[in-house]
Image (cartoon, rainbow, N blue to C red; front, top):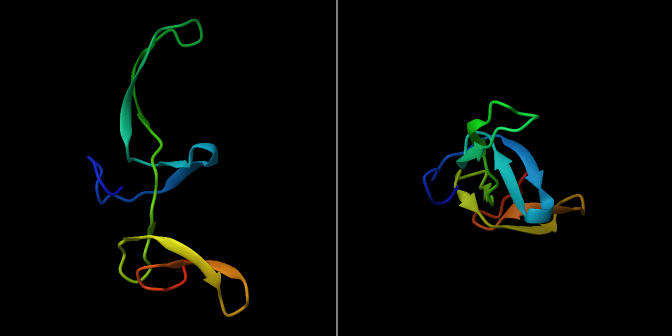
Length: 90
């Protein structure tokens, strides 16, 4: 993340939500969810859950967040590249 409580943290992407342009990352952007007891879950209670957030890719050379673009690589295929350094992102 670039700002907030989890600034400068990285983690493993668990799920991509393409319709909302968000992703769920392990251990980042934790929210507290209150759940009422019901017939299916009689215990109810308070749960800590990861919430969705917007992501930026990391520049392969500097390790900092970067914007990306697309251009043709040596094989003639479109590939993402870092706008900071100009290197291709795998």
